[in-house]
Length: 107
Image (cartoon, rainbow, N blue to C red):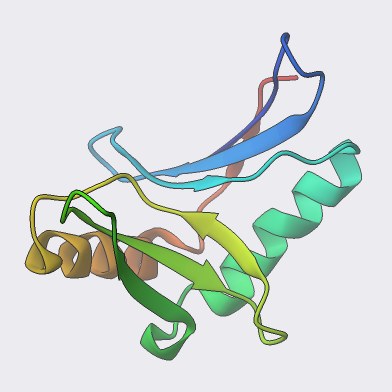
């Protein structure tokens, strides 16, 4: 399930994708307009079902995380940090499974 929300601090709109267990598996960057955040969700639905659109990266501390990219190469969302690359791959599998979910508007 996607949750669309607005930051009280920045005033920007964000979305997050949650797995069936409620864990956040993908988070967006901030958007100035609500419509842009909704377009971001649609982009995840379109691009988040194909493994080739994901890229596993490493932090300077050696943790793994992944980003989901649109067809134009722009990052749509990012995961939390995982202890291993295998953990990140599990997160990717969860995004692929849950990408078609409904959107809950919390704004």
